[in-house]
Image (cartoon, rainbow, N blue to C red):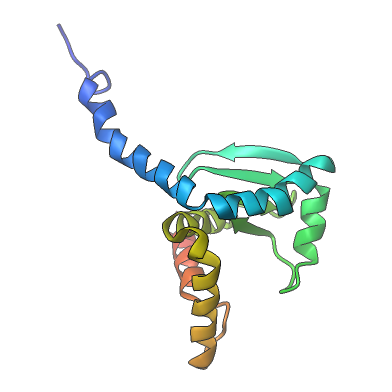
Length: 153
């Protein structure tokens, strides 16, 4: 009898902790994801939008459509190509690149780590940077980490 590396029963058990961690991250960030669903996903879908499921490296729902384009172009902090709330990434139909998606998925992982406190700690990081004479966006530690993820991809 020949056993390949792909048929070992232990492989499934070895992946179990990672899968549990992903599930816990999804649950921990669920309040943010539900907020994103209400504010971004549902209206976008109702107005000819679409949802794609991204599984790797981080599970997320990718939402695009005409309303998403308008919301991102008219964002109060300036036009954006994409943004993440919990496990939902809203992106422009034309402007989404692999680099931008990687950046936003880094924010999804951050939300999974910090849970519903993520918006508060993100804002605190911006205030910290500003109080230290740095740019509140470019020097926010969460944005720095997301840009680093872009480079690693």
